[in-house]
Amino acid sequence: MVATQEMLFEWDEWKERALARGIAEDLAELGKNLMRDAYMQRWPEAVLSDCGWDDDGFGMLALACAKPAETRRDWERLYAQYHRRPACPLDQPLAAEAKALAPLYPATRPQGNSHTSLMMGHPK
Image 1: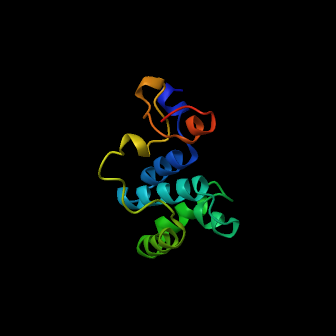
Image 2: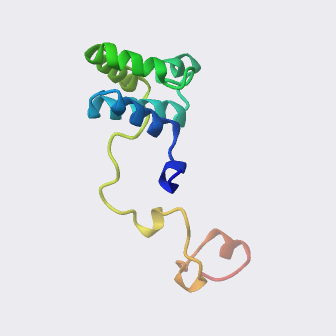
């Protein structure tokens, strides 16, 4: 087994099987993304079977081979209904104050009338 093959997820293997069966690249990619996101985003149990999780994706392969146009439409509908990624990423980097981690060194922290310094009797 090649090292890169050891790192394949179920959805990557599904895409390889789909391509080997002659399914169009874009439909195979859509099926892979559907299978991955259903799992990663914890879609409802009732939907997981439509996304290949009850039969290792063999039903998805059969549908994509037999009725590619209908399958694409159905998968796009599932995606539209359940996909939860944000529509637009941040365009500008966050300012230092908006970041989750504060500076490590006290000299870089803002000085002034903080809640702690006022409670301890320190001047502004």
